[in-house]
Image (cartoon, rainbow, N blue to C red):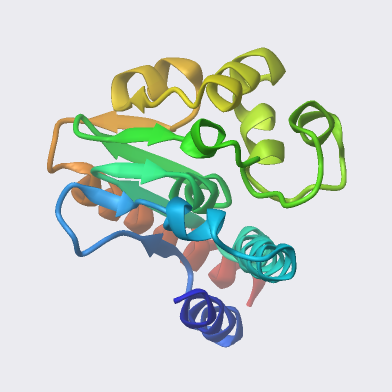
Length: 195
């Protein structure tokens, strides 16, 4: 799945007609539930290292796309799912959204394979959720979410600054389309001025 995501992001980055990217799930009540953490606990250190590096490079590629990206969260965005949403420029969630990094409940450091949790949150070289989350909500709130594995409701995510918009259940995609159209109009206006 990660290879498919990275390939999709690479295709988008090469498409000069793309002005906005919306990432959403076709599965009701789930944005992305992340990796199978029980499976990850069974991986060898080299398998974990490869998986984490692939995940990190995919989300870093998403974050670096030259066009605006919007995560449409109308359900669970947990672990790698939240990390993918954090790599987007904007996050829109509905009432049914549930966001969190539950890895610590299984003694796994979110987005990492080989460092202590405190070091990861303070390190500037990490490209995963443990770096993006503090940039959005501050170190103290990020540490609370990461250390406890607490899941945050859509309403709480909005008040924490974790998402840009909070809408009624089932309305996240409509709000995202509205914003994407607004961005698209602005981009087209800029192109007209530049040309």
